[in-house]
Image 1 (cartoon, rainbow, N blue to C red):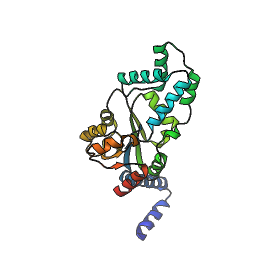
Image 2 (cartoon, one colour; image 1 turned 120 degrees about the horizontal axis):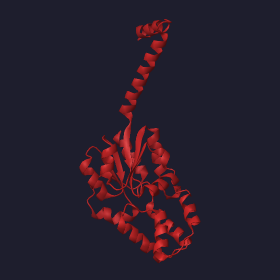
Image 3 (cartoon, rainbow, N blue to C red; image 1 turned 60 degrees about the vertical axis):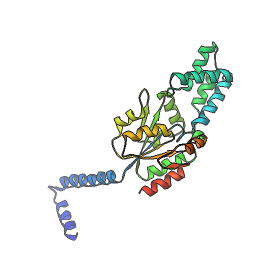
Image 4 (spheres, helix red, strand yellow; image 1 turned 60 degrees about the horizontal axis):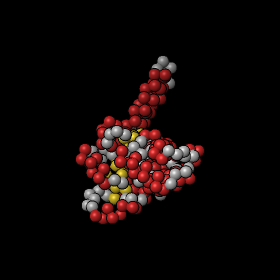
Length: 248
């Protein structure tokens, strides 16, 4: 080691090759850094709705907003069911309000609706969501968000909940399955965290290298008991942290 340091010292102090030496040394250091980063970086993929975000609570409050804007419970619920019948993964809160106006020939107060969409959605995050994302960032994980739905509304939910800056990639499936979206962007080992068991089973068939974890929704307790869930399940993000620590 002493001899190597001596050689580097002599080479560095030769004026003719000093600048070239610095460039080569920097390239070697960069190469070592990239190699180390590639070796230590792990990837985790999160679902948004009902996993990071308490979408049930968000929907409940959005219905209250529609009522404040001038719609009745009947109008809100009927139009909601109609929109879901057209496409389960294309719901948009703004379009819901517009659908009520069209169907019932009425005018809603869009100032109330827009104020809601521009307000903070952080209160709708499931407990511990930001803590686990901060933990993953500090520990050099690549964090990917994979969500299905209307791109405009999904982007609003991501932005207003304060999640946007945590992700290295944000993938929104619209007009295609999550499997198809994953094929375009992900081809490596990853941890996959989702609440929807049937959807997860479909992804498991194609992505064998993933490690799967099911986030248990509080309103689906009976479903989890009645079905044979073949992957680890967590009730909160503290449990996820313990699981990820065990993976290391």
